[in-house]
Length: 149
Image (cartoon, rainbow, N blue to C red; front, side, top):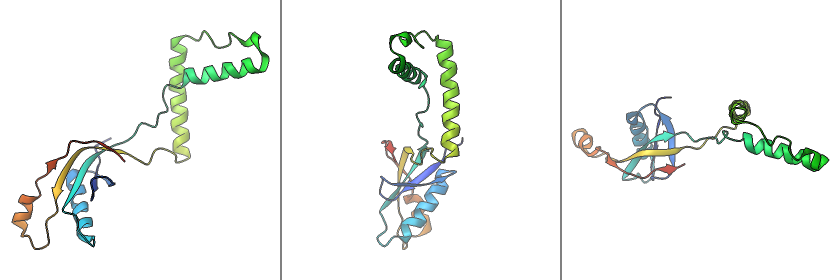
């Protein structure tokens, strides 16, 4: 997936999924100028889609299944699922990840939030600034933090 960009008017709340930093900057400047009190600068960052945390649950699931069997029948189930080999665990992890991803998609439950990195701050030109000056003033200032949005 190509990098997507978002903008913020306050450095904390990021908006959008633009194809380029320039598209995000254009949208951010438009939004800034529509504000009652325009900000002095806007922030452009690269969106980082979050991990939905659906991988690596096979051992936990098998342990829970074994505990439920033990709770139901007692000691005869004590060794149930205790000796599953690593290849079988890896196979179950892959299958569960596919199943969970499809389930999250089907129910529109994938994360809607995102992280932002590669943040740069751009000054917002005032309407009275000439185009030649505002191009020079729009040089970004890098902000080195990464935010979870």
